[in-house]
Amino acid sequence: MKPSTGGKRLKTIVLILLNVILLTSGQLLWKMGLTREGGISLDNMLRVALSPFILAGLALYVVATVIWFIVLSRAELSYAYPLQSMAYIIGVVAAWLLFNETVPVIRWVGVFVIIVGVVLVSYSKPQEGTRVSGAAPKAYKAEVMVNGTGTERVQAGRFSEVPADTGDYGTEDYSTDDFGIKNKGENK
Image 1 (spheres, rainbow, N blue to C red):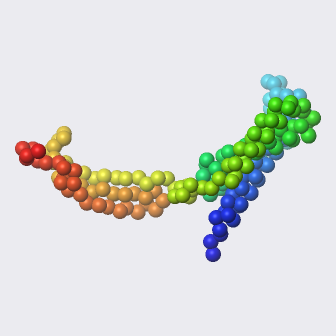
Image 2: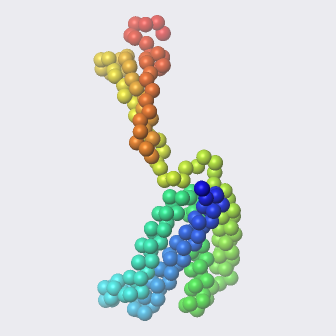
Image 3: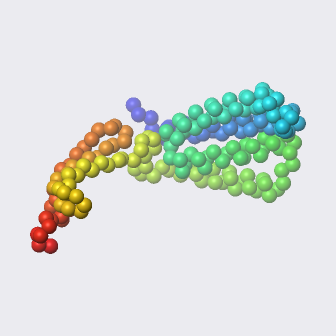
């Protein structure tokens, strides 16, 4: 039994949320690591790079990237990518709560605008016929035999459709009449 479209969409949203949480957590770990090291300079660059906080943040980014690949294989980029802006919302709230950063009113207004955008995008439906399987568009190959050189008469040819997702070939034969090409000297 195939999962419903709503079920697939919910799973995709959960994966996007997990991706966003991992990305934001990575940023928070980086901030903590840099704060503990007193920022970064030429004197402490290696120590910062080897900080457990920095390394843990990098590890979270790797996991988030793998999850993002799964998301992109299931959803339209124009749907999934705007939902990642939830990271900005979580980031601002976390900076306010964890680092006691002062967040001006205008920044909170911006966060609210992002929330509205995320809600609008999350309620949008995928376009009909949109491919989200990750397969590339179809490629086409033409084989043409030419009599002589230059722009002389096409004698025969084959048109082949090469679906990128299967590698199978479908061919159609055509003749010079299909293109309205006439021999030299024929009436136009």
